[in-house]
Length: 281
Ligand SMILES: [Zn+2]
Image (cartoon, rainbow, N blue to C red; front, side):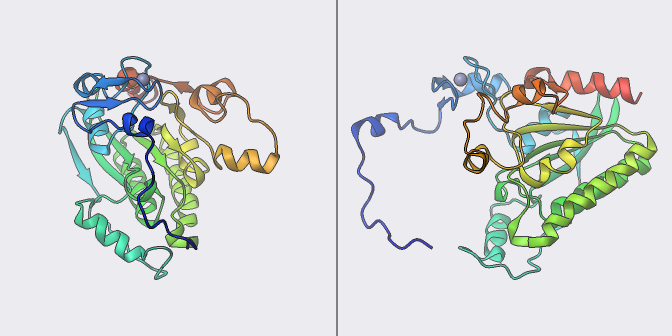
């Protein structure tokens, strides 16, 4: 809780006013700060045509890129969150969940779908950062575990696109248990000889990095994604030293052996098809 509240609106300096860009036709790139035509970015799979910055995309956009527009069926949508701890912080967890449901977010922080990837039936799970920071609560754990079990029994390759702030504090220890639950389930795929590909997108942190996101037969990252357990600021404050340039970004992690490949979004579907054919077909 803050002690003081600002009564009046923040004073705006002319430069701040100038920096405001109306939503709509144009979009400002978070990396090169260029103003680019939204249509051009959309036609480029939400990647900045000037600097290759990968804008975050929604699970629907992701599934359309992987399977083709609408060419997939959703799974496990009936699994809904509860509030086992009656958790209240700045807001009540129950209220937050209700609000998200009213916004039509029925898939919780992960969407699971099945479709064909290069003619092979494949299950794809995509985490949704717009649902409580893509945090891993019991629903995320349960949906992913069921996806894994389904893949093991039906012999389907599995791809998980991670994007998460980590565990969901509103579910306390129950949230942390999902790390062990999903990781243990993934052992079933190994036993069945079914490939699991992990794709790490910006940002993948906390308990998700510390569990299933790093357990792929191949771990692929999108360019420039922040991937780590604790954030760089926390680490810097703890070790009291300057962090190297590009620390915890995909390219740095590739150089240091933490991920296997960094693949541009425009090549990703093709790469995934190639990899699944190699490992599975
Ligand atoms: Zn850019």
